[in-house]
Image (tube, rainbow, N blue to C red; front, side, top):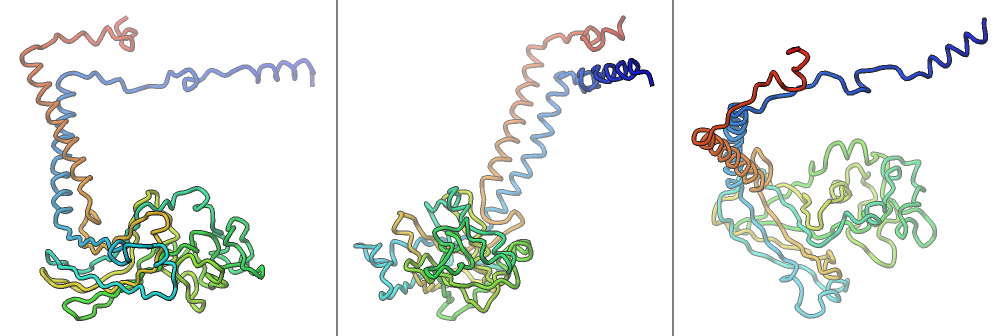
Length: 335
């Protein structure tokens, strides 16, 4: 083989190859925004968005929510932190609520915590996903400090600050002095149970240190069945958040007296947080949320207003349209 021929081939291969993609000459859609197209587009968006907004707002208004903030009422006014940290004090608190409207089952019971930053970087990283999933990874606690190992060096399962701070208030609910069951099964995401928490991983050395962070776990139940923990471990993005506590699978009538016996254990007083009990029904859009309906109505109404405005402007002050054949992408055809 001729070496000059090889060298010439290599030089030829290094030469940039012409491409319509690299030269930005691919066909493109170049619409002409005539008054008819603009008015039609705004009208179509308005006609679609306004009914969706009305339906969403109507569904949200039908949802019944019962909200009770109990953190301030369930502790004495003086030395709240001392009261909640004293393990010998009785922290039972009874709240009586009146149901404003009929609540059809299932009724979802949530706890809402305010000013708790679960999205803090160090807090979010304080966990071991492999330890939660695999039995063989029990010793992988490097990212979990200071809740990685017990005083004798044994690994804590589950380790980390997220699990350590597990919510531990409890609610016992009765309607008209008749106790009703709060179903705590099926409250976690099935994907989390199947893929993130092992069925052969059991709690060990959990909450046995000098400072107890929150709830304790049953060491005879695998992590994949500890649904309170699974719900808590899915960290919230905002400082005020709700997490599912359980479901009431019975209807509650209007004006019924709801009695809630609360074990007020969780310490939100040290950082000025709040605790709220929420009972809520749902609809096809989920929980109560007026923002979706208001947003659709706002955008739809604005588009209809602009459409009418363009029609009036075109009727009273029309402008002559240019000849599209003189546009740059049509000149070759014209020539």
